[in-house]
Length: 192
Length: 201
Image (cartoon, rainbow over all chains, first blue to last red; front, side, top):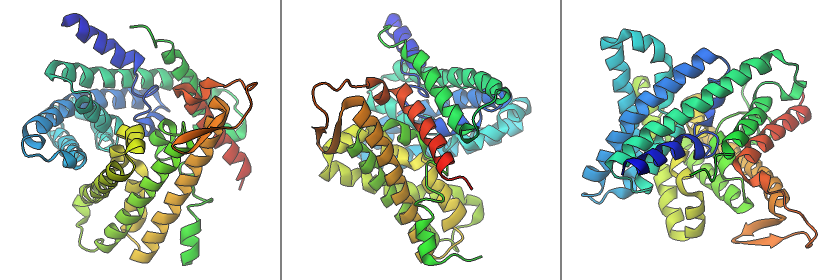
Protein backbone atom coordinates (compact mmCIF):
# COMPACT_ATOMS: atom_id res chain seq x y z
CA UNK A 1 0.00 0.00 0.00
CA UNK A 2 2.68 2.47 1.06
CA UNK A 3 4.97 1.34 -1.75
CA UNK A 4 2.24 1.85 -4.33
CA UNK A 5 1.61 5.37 -3.09
CA UNK A 6 5.32 6.19 -3.26
CA UNK A 7 5.44 4.92 -6.81
CA UNK A 8 2.38 7.04 -7.63
CA UNK A 9 4.04 10.08 -6.09
CA UNK A 10 7.21 9.80 -8.15
CA UNK A 11 5.40 8.96 -11.33
CA UNK A 12 3.24 12.08 -10.89
CA UNK A 13 6.19 14.33 -10.13
CA UNK A 14 8.70 13.06 -12.65
CA UNK A 15 7.49 10.51 -15.17
CA UNK A 16 4.12 12.07 -15.95
CA UNK A 17 5.22 15.59 -15.16
CA UNK A 18 2.14 17.69 -15.68
CA UNK A 19 3.87 20.50 -17.53
CA UNK A 20 6.46 18.85 -19.66
CA UNK A 21 5.00 15.45 -20.40
CA UNK A 22 1.23 15.95 -20.10
CA UNK A 23 1.27 19.48 -21.51
CA UNK A 24 -1.07 21.05 -18.98
CA UNK A 25 -0.72 24.54 -17.55
CA UNK A 26 1.50 25.94 -20.25
CA UNK A 27 0.11 29.48 -20.27
CA UNK A 28 1.22 30.29 -16.70
CA UNK A 29 4.38 28.30 -17.40
CA UNK A 30 5.45 30.74 -20.09
CA UNK A 31 3.84 33.73 -18.43
CA UNK A 32 5.38 33.54 -14.97
CA UNK A 33 8.77 32.00 -15.72
CA UNK A 34 10.58 35.20 -16.65
CA UNK A 35 11.61 35.84 -13.07
CA UNK A 36 12.49 33.36 -10.36
CA UNK A 37 10.36 35.24 -7.86
CA UNK A 38 7.13 35.00 -9.82
CA UNK A 39 7.88 31.37 -10.67
CA UNK A 40 8.19 30.30 -7.04
CA UNK A 41 5.10 32.33 -6.12
CA UNK A 42 3.04 30.67 -8.81
CA UNK A 43 4.37 27.22 -7.94
CA UNK A 44 3.40 27.58 -4.29
CA UNK A 45 -0.01 28.97 -5.12
CA UNK A 46 -0.72 26.03 -7.42
CA UNK A 47 0.31 23.46 -4.80
CA UNK A 48 -1.84 25.18 -2.20
CA UNK A 49 -4.97 25.45 -4.35
CA UNK A 50 -4.68 22.09 -6.06
CA UNK A 51 -4.61 20.05 -2.87
CA UNK A 52 -7.81 21.77 -1.73
CA UNK A 53 -9.41 21.63 -5.17
CA UNK A 54 -8.54 17.95 -5.57
CA UNK A 55 -10.19 17.01 -2.30
CA UNK A 56 -13.31 19.10 -2.88
CA UNK A 57 -13.92 18.07 -6.49
CA UNK A 58 -13.39 14.42 -5.54
CA UNK A 59 -16.03 14.75 -2.82
CA UNK A 60 -18.37 16.62 -5.18
CA UNK A 61 -18.07 13.82 -7.73
CA UNK A 62 -18.65 11.11 -5.14
CA UNK A 63 -21.47 12.65 -3.13
CA UNK A 64 -23.23 14.97 -5.57
CA UNK A 65 -22.67 14.10 -9.21
CA UNK A 66 -22.78 10.30 -9.02
CA UNK A 67 -25.79 9.85 -6.68
CA UNK A 68 -27.89 12.38 -8.61
CA UNK A 69 -26.75 11.04 -11.97
CA UNK A 70 -25.36 14.39 -13.06
CA UNK A 71 -22.01 13.19 -14.39
CA UNK A 72 -22.47 15.10 -17.63
CA UNK A 73 -22.32 18.34 -15.65
CA UNK A 74 -18.86 17.47 -14.32
CA UNK A 75 -17.01 20.11 -16.33
CA UNK A 76 -19.20 22.99 -15.25
CA UNK A 77 -19.44 21.78 -11.65
CA UNK A 78 -15.67 21.43 -11.29
CA UNK A 79 -14.80 24.75 -12.82
CA UNK A 80 -17.33 26.52 -10.60
CA UNK A 81 -15.97 24.76 -7.54
CA UNK A 82 -12.45 25.81 -8.48
CA UNK A 83 -13.45 29.40 -9.20
CA UNK A 84 -15.33 29.67 -5.91
CA UNK A 85 -12.51 28.00 -4.01
CA UNK A 86 -9.90 30.36 -5.41
CA UNK A 87 -12.04 33.36 -4.48
CA UNK A 88 -12.59 31.96 -1.01
CA UNK A 89 -8.92 31.16 -0.45
CA UNK A 90 -8.03 34.67 -1.53
CA UNK A 91 -10.43 36.26 0.95
CA UNK A 92 -9.38 33.90 3.72
CA UNK A 93 -5.67 34.56 3.23
CA UNK A 94 -6.18 38.30 3.03
CA UNK A 95 -8.00 38.27 6.36
CA UNK A 96 -6.10 35.71 8.40
CA UNK A 97 -2.65 35.08 6.94
CA UNK A 98 -1.62 38.38 5.33
CA UNK A 99 2.02 37.24 5.00
CA UNK A 100 1.04 34.36 2.78
CA UNK A 101 -1.40 36.58 0.92
CA UNK A 102 1.26 39.06 -0.09
CA UNK A 103 3.33 36.14 -1.34
CA UNK A 104 0.64 34.35 -3.30
CA UNK A 105 -1.90 37.15 -3.76
CA UNK A 106 -1.53 38.14 -7.36
CA UNK A 107 -1.15 34.58 -8.60
CA UNK A 108 -4.33 33.31 -7.03
CA UNK A 109 -6.85 34.76 -9.52
CA UNK A 110 -4.74 33.38 -12.38
CA UNK A 111 -5.16 29.88 -11.05
CA UNK A 112 -8.83 29.65 -11.98
CA UNK A 113 -7.86 29.51 -15.62
CA UNK A 114 -4.80 27.34 -15.08
CA UNK A 115 -5.66 24.15 -16.90
CA UNK A 116 -3.35 22.12 -14.69
CA UNK A 117 -5.79 22.56 -11.80
CA UNK A 118 -8.90 21.45 -13.65
CA UNK A 119 -6.82 18.86 -15.48
CA UNK A 120 -5.60 17.14 -12.33
CA UNK A 121 -9.10 17.15 -10.83
CA UNK A 122 -10.39 15.44 -13.97
CA UNK A 123 -7.49 12.96 -14.03
CA UNK A 124 -8.29 11.99 -10.44
CA UNK A 125 -11.80 11.06 -11.50
CA UNK A 126 -10.86 9.39 -14.77
CA UNK A 127 -8.24 7.18 -13.15
CA UNK A 128 -10.73 6.13 -10.47
CA UNK A 129 -8.37 7.03 -7.65
CA UNK A 130 -9.37 6.24 -4.08
CA UNK A 131 -9.03 8.89 -1.40
CA UNK A 132 -5.33 8.36 -0.64
CA UNK A 133 -4.32 8.06 -4.26
CA UNK A 134 -6.28 11.24 -4.99
CA UNK A 135 -4.48 13.01 -2.14
CA UNK A 136 -1.07 11.93 -3.42
CA UNK A 137 -1.82 12.85 -7.01
CA UNK A 138 -3.28 16.27 -6.11
CA UNK A 139 -0.11 16.99 -4.17
CA UNK A 140 2.45 15.38 -6.47
CA UNK A 141 1.27 16.87 -9.75
CA UNK A 142 1.59 20.48 -8.57
CA UNK A 143 4.95 19.65 -7.00
CA UNK A 144 6.05 18.46 -10.43
CA UNK A 145 4.59 21.64 -11.90
CA UNK A 146 6.56 23.74 -9.43
CA UNK A 147 9.75 21.79 -10.04
CA UNK A 148 9.53 22.25 -13.80
CA UNK A 149 8.55 25.90 -13.44
CA UNK A 150 11.43 26.76 -11.12
CA UNK A 151 13.96 24.87 -13.25
CA UNK A 152 12.70 26.62 -16.33
CA UNK A 153 12.75 30.05 -14.70
CA UNK A 154 16.39 29.48 -13.79
CA UNK A 155 17.26 28.62 -17.38
CA UNK A 156 15.22 31.49 -18.74
CA UNK A 157 16.96 34.09 -16.61
CA UNK A 158 20.18 33.04 -18.28
CA UNK A 159 18.66 33.13 -21.75
CA UNK A 160 17.76 36.78 -21.24
CA UNK A 161 21.48 37.53 -21.05
CA UNK A 162 22.35 35.47 -24.11
CA UNK A 163 22.15 36.76 -27.66
CA UNK A 164 19.30 35.02 -29.43
CA UNK A 165 18.27 35.55 -33.08
CA UNK A 166 15.70 38.30 -33.24
CA UNK A 167 12.66 36.33 -34.44
CA UNK A 168 13.23 33.78 -31.71
CA UNK A 169 13.40 36.16 -28.82
CA UNK A 170 11.18 35.59 -25.80
CA UNK A 171 8.45 33.00 -26.33
CA UNK A 172 9.89 31.10 -29.28
CA UNK A 173 13.24 30.39 -27.65
CA UNK A 174 11.36 29.74 -24.41
CA UNK A 175 9.41 26.94 -26.05
CA UNK A 176 12.52 25.40 -27.57
CA UNK A 177 14.17 25.48 -24.14
CA UNK A 178 11.07 23.89 -22.64
CA UNK A 179 11.50 21.16 -25.22
CA UNK A 180 15.05 20.48 -24.00
CA UNK A 181 13.81 20.40 -20.42
CA UNK A 182 11.03 18.08 -21.46
CA UNK A 183 13.65 15.80 -22.98
CA UNK A 184 15.37 15.47 -19.62
CA UNK A 185 12.10 14.54 -17.95
CA UNK A 186 11.47 12.14 -20.78
CA UNK A 187 14.45 10.16 -19.57
CA UNK A 188 12.50 9.10 -16.48
CA UNK A 189 10.17 7.05 -18.66
CA UNK A 190 10.50 3.39 -17.84
CA UNK A 191 11.99 4.16 -14.45
CA UNK A 192 9.20 2.58 -12.43
CA UNK B 1 -11.11 53.27 -35.84
CA UNK B 2 -13.92 50.91 -36.64
CA UNK B 3 -13.14 47.79 -38.58
CA UNK B 4 -15.41 46.53 -41.32
CA UNK B 5 -17.22 43.27 -40.73
CA UNK B 6 -14.95 41.44 -43.15
CA UNK B 7 -11.87 42.67 -41.32
CA UNK B 8 -13.40 41.51 -38.06
CA UNK B 9 -13.47 38.01 -39.53
CA UNK B 10 -10.13 37.96 -41.33
CA UNK B 11 -7.97 39.38 -38.54
CA UNK B 12 -8.17 36.00 -36.80
CA UNK B 13 -6.78 34.26 -39.87
CA UNK B 14 -3.43 36.00 -40.15
CA UNK B 15 -2.83 39.25 -38.30
CA UNK B 16 -3.88 37.92 -34.88
CA UNK B 17 -3.92 34.19 -35.52
CA UNK B 18 -3.96 32.13 -32.34
CA UNK B 19 -1.77 30.53 -31.07
CA UNK B 20 1.11 32.06 -33.06
CA UNK B 21 0.43 35.77 -32.86
CA UNK B 22 -1.71 35.54 -29.79
CA UNK B 23 0.19 33.12 -27.59
CA UNK B 24 -2.87 31.64 -25.92
CA UNK B 25 -4.36 28.18 -25.77
CA UNK B 26 -1.02 26.43 -25.84
CA UNK B 27 -1.89 23.26 -23.98
CA UNK B 28 -4.08 21.67 -26.66
CA UNK B 29 -1.74 23.06 -29.31
CA UNK B 30 1.05 20.99 -27.89
CA UNK B 31 -0.92 17.99 -26.82
CA UNK B 32 -3.19 17.05 -29.67
CA UNK B 33 -1.24 18.05 -32.75
CA UNK B 34 0.21 14.55 -33.10
CA UNK B 35 -2.24 13.63 -35.86
CA UNK B 36 -4.06 15.82 -38.34
CA UNK B 37 -7.43 14.36 -37.43
CA UNK B 38 -7.03 15.26 -33.77
CA UNK B 39 -5.91 18.76 -34.71
CA UNK B 40 -8.85 19.73 -36.86
CA UNK B 41 -11.26 17.92 -34.53
CA UNK B 42 -10.02 20.08 -31.69
CA UNK B 43 -10.08 23.14 -33.94
CA UNK B 44 -13.72 22.60 -34.85
CA UNK B 45 -14.66 22.05 -31.20
CA UNK B 46 -12.93 25.26 -30.15
CA UNK B 47 -14.48 27.19 -33.04
CA UNK B 48 -17.95 26.05 -32.00
CA UNK B 49 -17.42 27.01 -28.38
CA UNK B 50 -15.80 30.31 -29.30
CA UNK B 51 -18.49 31.40 -31.76
CA UNK B 52 -21.46 30.52 -29.56
CA UNK B 53 -19.97 31.78 -26.31
CA UNK B 54 -19.09 35.05 -28.06
CA UNK B 55 -22.66 35.40 -29.37
CA UNK B 56 -24.27 34.67 -26.01
CA UNK B 57 -21.92 36.84 -24.01
CA UNK B 58 -22.36 39.69 -26.45
CA UNK B 59 -26.13 39.33 -26.21
CA UNK B 60 -25.97 39.40 -22.43
CA UNK B 61 -23.30 42.09 -22.16
CA UNK B 62 -25.67 44.72 -20.80
CA UNK B 63 -27.19 42.36 -18.22
CA UNK B 64 -24.05 40.79 -16.72
CA UNK B 65 -22.83 42.92 -13.79
CA UNK B 66 -19.14 43.68 -14.23
CA UNK B 67 -18.19 42.38 -10.79
CA UNK B 68 -19.24 38.82 -11.47
CA UNK B 69 -18.49 38.85 -15.17
CA UNK B 70 -15.62 36.35 -15.05
CA UNK B 71 -17.77 33.72 -13.36
CA UNK B 72 -20.60 34.45 -15.77
CA UNK B 73 -18.25 33.99 -18.73
CA UNK B 74 -16.98 30.72 -17.31
CA UNK B 75 -20.51 29.40 -16.92
CA UNK B 76 -21.42 30.34 -20.50
CA UNK B 77 -18.25 28.80 -21.91
CA UNK B 78 -18.58 25.65 -19.79
CA UNK B 79 -22.14 25.17 -21.02
CA UNK B 80 -21.04 25.14 -24.64
CA UNK B 81 -18.12 22.89 -23.81
CA UNK B 82 -20.54 20.37 -22.34
CA UNK B 83 -22.64 20.59 -25.50
CA UNK B 84 -19.53 19.83 -27.59
CA UNK B 85 -18.57 17.01 -25.25
CA UNK B 86 -21.95 15.32 -25.53
CA UNK B 87 -22.19 15.78 -29.29
CA UNK B 88 -18.73 14.33 -29.84
CA UNK B 89 -19.46 11.44 -27.52
CA UNK B 90 -22.53 10.63 -29.59
CA UNK B 91 -21.23 11.06 -33.13
CA UNK B 92 -17.44 10.88 -33.17
CA UNK B 93 -16.67 8.55 -30.31
CA UNK B 94 -13.20 7.48 -31.52
CA UNK B 95 -12.07 11.09 -31.75
CA UNK B 96 -13.69 11.85 -28.39
CA UNK B 97 -11.55 9.15 -26.78
CA UNK B 98 -8.37 10.39 -28.45
CA UNK B 99 -8.84 14.00 -27.42
CA UNK B 100 -9.84 12.80 -23.95
CA UNK B 101 -9.25 15.27 -21.19
CA UNK B 102 -8.57 18.13 -23.60
CA UNK B 103 -12.23 18.56 -24.51
CA UNK B 104 -13.39 19.52 -21.00
CA UNK B 105 -10.24 21.61 -20.76
CA UNK B 106 -11.51 23.94 -23.49
CA UNK B 107 -13.21 25.68 -20.55
CA UNK B 108 -9.88 26.90 -19.26
CA UNK B 109 -8.38 27.44 -22.70
CA UNK B 110 -7.48 31.11 -22.66
CA UNK B 111 -8.86 31.86 -26.12
CA UNK B 112 -12.63 31.79 -25.42
CA UNK B 113 -12.07 33.47 -22.07
CA UNK B 114 -9.79 36.10 -23.55
CA UNK B 115 -12.18 36.90 -26.40
CA UNK B 116 -15.13 37.09 -24.03
CA UNK B 117 -13.33 39.58 -21.83
CA UNK B 118 -11.61 41.62 -24.52
CA UNK B 119 -14.14 41.59 -27.32
CA UNK B 120 -17.56 40.02 -26.86
CA UNK B 121 -18.38 41.96 -23.72
CA UNK B 122 -17.92 45.23 -25.61
CA UNK B 123 -19.16 44.61 -29.16
CA UNK B 124 -22.37 43.85 -31.03
CA UNK B 125 -23.60 40.31 -31.64
CA UNK B 126 -22.72 40.18 -35.34
CA UNK B 127 -19.19 41.44 -34.76
CA UNK B 128 -18.64 39.04 -31.88
CA UNK B 129 -19.87 36.11 -33.93
CA UNK B 130 -17.53 36.98 -36.79
CA UNK B 131 -14.65 37.51 -34.40
CA UNK B 132 -15.27 34.11 -32.80
CA UNK B 133 -15.59 32.32 -36.14
CA UNK B 134 -12.50 33.97 -37.58
CA UNK B 135 -10.30 33.16 -34.64
CA UNK B 136 -11.67 29.64 -34.36
CA UNK B 137 -10.90 29.07 -38.02
CA UNK B 138 -7.44 30.57 -37.58
CA UNK B 139 -6.82 28.27 -34.64
CA UNK B 140 -7.99 25.26 -36.66
CA UNK B 141 -5.64 26.17 -39.51
CA UNK B 142 -2.73 26.72 -37.17
CA UNK B 143 -3.28 23.40 -35.41
CA UNK B 144 -3.66 21.58 -38.71
CA UNK B 145 -0.43 23.00 -40.14
CA UNK B 146 1.50 22.07 -37.03
CA UNK B 147 -0.07 18.62 -36.91
CA UNK B 148 0.60 17.90 -40.58
CA UNK B 149 4.24 18.78 -40.12
CA UNK B 150 4.65 16.71 -36.99
CA UNK B 151 2.75 13.67 -38.15
CA UNK B 152 4.31 13.46 -41.61
CA UNK B 153 7.86 13.76 -40.35
CA UNK B 154 7.37 11.59 -37.30
CA UNK B 155 5.46 8.69 -38.82
CA UNK B 156 5.55 9.15 -42.57
CA UNK B 157 1.77 8.99 -42.64
CA UNK B 158 -1.16 11.35 -42.34
CA UNK B 159 -4.57 10.80 -40.75
CA UNK B 160 -7.29 12.64 -42.58
CA UNK B 161 -10.14 10.46 -41.41
CA UNK B 162 -9.68 7.56 -38.97
CA UNK B 163 -7.04 5.47 -40.79
CA UNK B 164 -3.55 6.88 -41.44
CA UNK B 165 -2.47 7.11 -45.06
CA UNK B 166 1.18 6.19 -45.67
CA UNK B 167 2.96 8.77 -47.78
CA UNK B 168 6.47 7.46 -48.30
CA UNK B 169 8.02 4.19 -49.40
CA UNK B 170 9.69 1.63 -47.09
CA UNK B 171 13.00 3.52 -47.19
CA UNK B 172 11.52 6.31 -45.01
CA UNK B 173 12.99 6.50 -41.53
CA UNK B 174 10.40 7.86 -39.12
CA UNK B 175 11.58 10.61 -36.78
CA UNK B 176 9.52 9.54 -33.74
CA UNK B 177 10.90 12.33 -31.60
CA UNK B 178 8.46 14.83 -33.07
CA UNK B 179 5.27 13.18 -31.82
CA UNK B 180 6.61 12.90 -28.28
CA UNK B 181 6.37 15.68 -25.72
CA UNK B 182 9.81 17.30 -26.27
CA UNK B 183 9.21 17.38 -30.01
CA UNK B 184 5.95 19.23 -29.48
CA UNK B 185 7.63 22.05 -27.58
CA UNK B 186 10.51 22.42 -30.00
CA UNK B 187 8.25 22.27 -33.03
CA UNK B 188 5.95 24.97 -31.69
CA UNK B 189 8.94 27.12 -30.76
CA UNK B 190 10.36 26.85 -34.28
CA UNK B 191 6.95 27.58 -35.74
CA UNK B 192 6.64 30.75 -33.65
CA UNK B 193 10.08 31.86 -34.78
CA UNK B 194 9.13 31.20 -38.40
CA UNK B 195 5.93 33.21 -38.01
CA UNK B 196 7.96 36.08 -36.59
CA UNK B 197 10.27 36.00 -39.62
CA UNK B 198 7.36 35.84 -42.09
CA UNK B 199 5.28 38.51 -40.44
CA UNK B 200 7.87 41.19 -39.78
CA UNK B 201 6.13 44.47 -39.32
